[in-house]
Image (cartoon, rainbow, N blue to C red; front, side, top):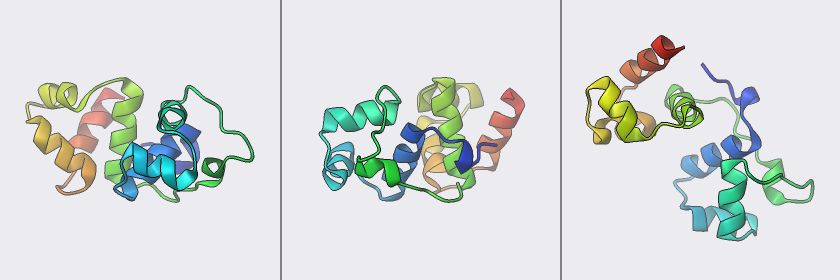
Length: 114
């Protein structure tokens, strides 16, 4: 599974934003960048400058559900894609990724995929 030390800067921002239950606009405002800049940073399409407040964001240890969510994003899959492959509803996969439901099946799914 993915460890926080292996996250890209954009993935760190994504995890930080999700932990705070922030929208993209709220996260961008907290850091002092535009929404467009935040999206580019989170997607990995822009570099973090040393003076950017986002450069100092650390997330610590990832929870299993966060690691599974990052894995899905790295695979380029949507929640609906994963749900279809697992035979579940997209709502249920979302609950597992958010930590509102046990994510054992989701972790097994990613382990099988390698």
